Each structure stands twice: as structure tokens, then as C-alpha cells.
Length: 204
Image 1 (cartoon, one colour):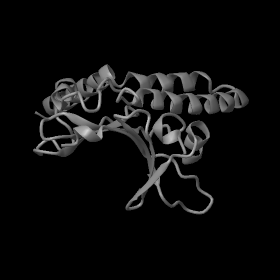
Image 2 (cartoon, one colour):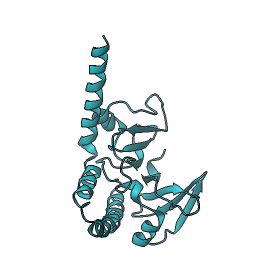
Image 3 (cartoon, one colour):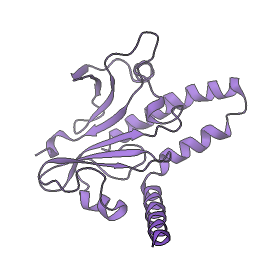
């Protein structure tokens, strides 16, 4: 009986990771590229800087279309049912109705994603939390300083609890948010926790 349970758990995890791979392709490509260039410290540092800037520009470019890296969903257009079809039930929020949030955390370096959903079941907020296994790549490798260096100082900075939020407007339809801690221990650097692409008109 125990073996059957373990087998089912293994199949479930394997299926989940496979489904994650169907959508979250971009983040895995970044990880692979980084590992290939890890041999030379000097080359890796230079490449890392290029990747950081390139990655931020890519985030901004996708945000113009209502997208975030790793997902084909479009804020304000894609129904959450499409995500359920690909990924199954979420870890958080699946039993909620009306305007709510749902969360998927695939673990094992596969990343985590959040979705703000309106009463009609349409996604109005896309969130990419990156992954915590290797913080030298992806969302959690970014800092507020690197964002400013690439995109300039945002015209709007918001605060929500312990979070500081840099808000950019890549288009009239969408807000791009870089979210991280408002305060860090002296000597530490504030890294981005997650990014959002938000379609305000769809938040009904």
C-alpha cells in the first residue's frame, strides 16, 4: 500500500513538473545559459551583467504585451481556466470565488507564479516569483539598483507593508512592478522578490 502511495506521489510530481515545463520555458533557458558560462569567473561576471540588463529589458518588452517571462498568459485576456487546464489545481486560492489570487509553486528550481483573477475568471495580475535554488539567475537575481540602471528611476514608488514597489508603465494598458523589501540589514543588497504585470482595467 505504501509503495502504491509513493508511486502515485511520484507520478503526480512528475506530471506537475512536466506541466510547468509547458509554460515556464523562458526561465529554464536562462538557468541553462548561466551554467554553461560558469567556467570563467571574469567571463561569468561580465555575462551576468549582460544577462541582468538583457533580462530586465526582456521583462519590460513582454510587459508591453501584458506578459511576464515564463508564461504565455496575457493579463486582462487569459482566463484562469487555461492555467488550470495546463497546471491543474493551484496550491493556494483554488477554492476561492470572486476576485481572488491563486498561487503555484513548482519547487526544485522550477519557479513560482501567482495570478490575480477577477469575478469573470480572467487574469488581471501576473506574478513571477522566480526560483530560490539558484538566486544568481532569474527574478531573484535582480536588484532595485540593476532595475534603475537599465530602466531609469520609476516615476512612481509605492510601499505596501514591508514591500517597496517600483512601478513602470510600459504601455497605457499595463503596469510593470518590481517588488522587494523596503528595508534590508546594513551591508545587504535589496533583491527583487517578484515582478507583476497588472492590467488595472480588468480588475473588476
